[in-house]
Image (tube, rainbow, N blue to C red; front, top):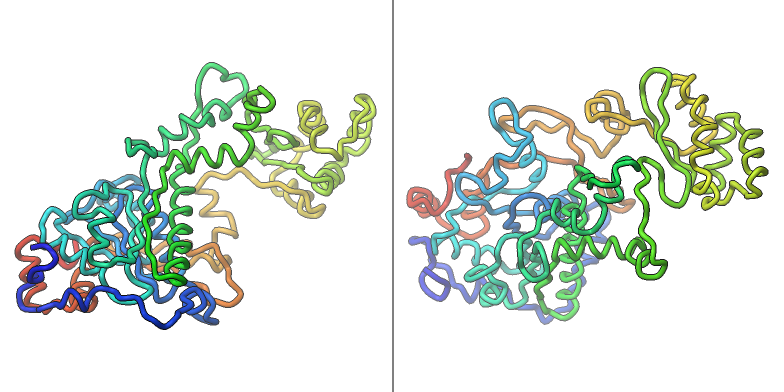
Length: 445
């Protein structure tokens, strides 16, 4: 049944008008209340509904959950499109799904059933400034459209992630192909083939934009009582980055296209070097101090002075280091090739040069202290059905808020009972009836 009739659960009568949020006449400073309270979780008191799949929207929800918001992810019974996505454990549990849903609550519903749709509407109609917010990257049409949901909460905030701005389908990998980066990535000699990078960069960027957009809309609602719909096309997020970093201007103003450079850094000096023990390091020298430190650590002052004199340039200027990058690389190569990674690291650190070791993910996990429990961002989390392992919380370290410890991801539908009974006031008998009817998933799947 739809809203305006008896609620979908039989025994519990819910006054739909009472359950709608009506803006208070008293001015509330929601950002002061939830963001600026000393010793609280930064987003404590906010409840966000997430109806999503894959990366962008779940990443937004994860970011908000890591800051203390209550994030309720809604999935189909049995799991959505990404529930079994790789990587998976030996017994088929998705490490991908569990990682993107750490700290959230899980509600599993048969979203095709009008009773399940009623549950979503009632969840979004909960009273309070910290309620009535939803993030989705699924089709917000019909009963789930912004206009339809505003019927139960006029000041609803909805963040909707699209593929392309016209509503057509696009994913990170197709968007990345479109914005030019595959022709800038890879070896310099691979001029006739695009090279994809493997990080879903545009999903992550869009997810962070979605979280930011929700908080901006919340601040607006706090000041004037108005909700709004915010659309974020994945392709627009990517194109905004390409524009903001000057790549589009480079073509339009200079009539030039940036060349593919392999591991060299455009416009300055930076590249990789092999070590005596078979490792690789990345070296950068963006600033005069970086450059001075690198030259001092490698004891190449005389060679660099001779190189600069022969070309009549000052190598403390990064554009000159870029133009002479191949010569600088040749001067530095023997120094790295004659030393182990440990020896190189000690000397570069002594001089405060800017560098980093190339590591596999296994080396990151096994060897890097920044990825260990020495870093307070990481905690051991016991994930049901998977085991105990290190998990990162939010990288944000506030001076006026406690760090929110990461917690396990939910089992699919593991919060069904809590959400329906404690959030929506459904009786226990009616909850079990909804499960039996296939409207709500089993308590834990």
